[in-house]
Length: 138
Image (tube, rainbow, N blue to C red; front, side, top):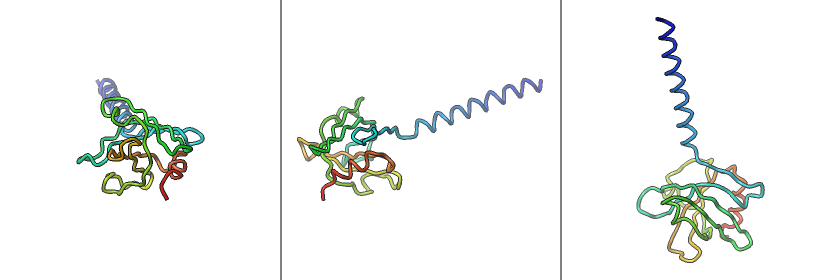
């Protein structure tokens, strides 16, 4: 009888630990950066939509020669993020809803329509931070 109880308790504990590991992995932002920082996978959201930003995974290519950030994103929310963007500065903390010192955010405007704004979020330790900082207007 006690062997069965131990078996059930160990099975429940295993499922609980596995579930918490999966939850922790899914709650983290996906990020990858190339060795020169010109390409990365990060989070991006449309800005000034009247609600909190809905972050989507975006694949970004940073073209320093033309001062352009090319974005490709999948999914329903990501379609509006695809295209060419210009870095216009860093957004105010009230627009980002993030007060983490380990995250850098950049305000972007669409290359062909400056009225459409977006926010790009990358970890502060990313190699892409220095490349994006070089695109900030002085």
